[in-house]
Length: 121
Image (cartoon, rainbow, N blue to C red; front, side, top):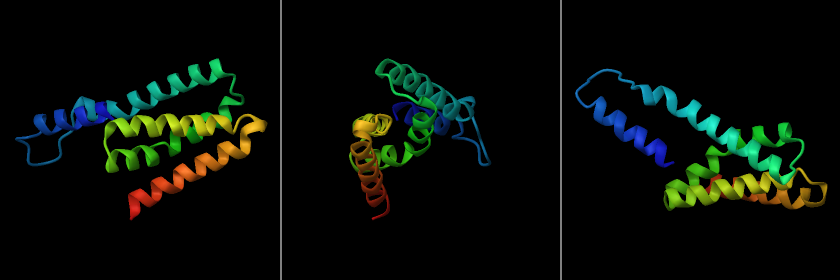
């Protein structure tokens, strides 16, 4: 989240004198760099935890993560977005183990629903 806000400040500063469309190198690189970092971290952490199948857990973690992250960032700040991201990843990781599947799905659905309520109230 801090990286995204830094890119926005840098872009605003660089494009300050431009009336038309203006993109900086960081504007183009922010999403691929963030996705690559998140994917690398999730693969390493899930491998260490023994989460299998990673192919079934990582895509929903990354694709749906912006919803709880945005809701947490909007309501309180960037540090809660970090906590929400960790909670989101952990709840989806729980769904990989049959023993904790119901708990993981319940926690993920609750977090997603609470995030949508926070975003659209």
